[in-house]
Length: 171
Image (tube, rainbow, N blue to C red; front, side, top):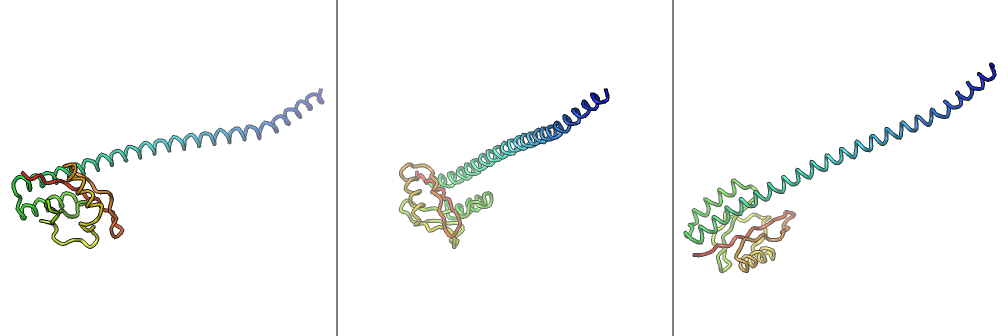
């Protein structure tokens, strides 16, 4: 009887010795899967938040550009209809520059391609020349379509520039 009990005890000991590493491996596998799943969920949350932030930034930028466009169109309409004076142009441009720091300067170029007014009066060393091919192309697009047009990006002195050309409709 003792030998049967001892045999059973030995079998149980061997079985426990075999199952213990298996149980530990199964626990480690389950824990690793839990960590992977948690990490994936966190990545999805971060990606969703980033996507929402990007959409918000895009909408904010669109709103800024639309606001600037409206202000520029107002100045252009006043030049075309009321014959805006140089002082009025300077005052309106100053207001635009103060409310929109991304706007660096404003030029009124007449139908012959000559600069009539510019604010600020001095040209920045890093701003693109009026004869830059992207600016010429944007002015040509405005003349062809009679509508506002953005230039393609201009890289001058390691600074990217984007010109917004608005037509002046003389009445």
